[in-house]
Image 1: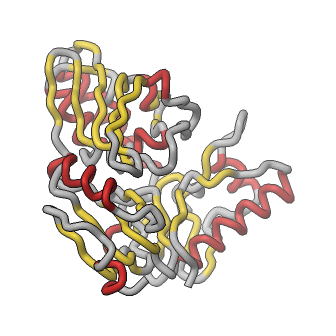
Image 2 (image 1 turned 60 degrees about the vertical axis):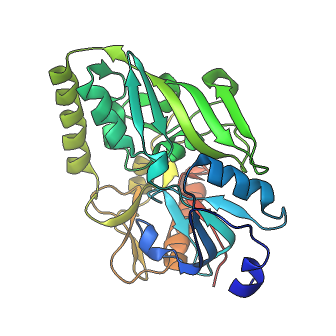
Length: 301
């Protein structure tokens, strides 16, 4: 839809509403075509009013820092919502942390540690935002979001506020039963009192492990595939000889072969073809169907 046609159908907002915005600079892979519109709401009320007034036939897609997202080269139709500073607040009272969905996972881990709360250290090893963590039950090193979150707040496609307990989210490995049209805005976490020095030390250990085993300095998107039951994706990829496999500018990292990287000139199509070639060969040789952990959105060029 053209910018003029779309703008005539969207409501007025207090935040920023931009048109025909290339999404590549907003993603960790640094690939992807344009969004018809990009909305950065001023606050929750602004987002709620926008969703309530936005015509239902116009798609709305929330996007965090896109650390685990592949935007296709043809771009995204409709409106991409990116939460700004108003959604990044972290408020700690006793053992509870009230956290905005745009807060970085590592910022939440550090805030909890500084307050003398343990149980959220694993977020130091996840390069995303809390909104994404709530959506996919993000986790690493033996801990997951489900272990420490207690309450989840979202807005549905009609702008209505939805409050759920952790037990109502249907969390499983890298998955939740939250409707796709929900936009997470806030969550309440609970930590366990602990010595801040010890908590920070455990965070440092996680950070060191991650830096030593993952290509975090590259243009990547985190783990490409979720681990199948009883197996590890990287071991399967290694076993079929695909460590370092390359298609165009896309490559399976030699450092951690469950990570795809943009070597400099990759297209989203290169990355998706590479991932699908891995899935094909693992299925052919190991009879295991790898499931994408990276979310792919948008249209092919």
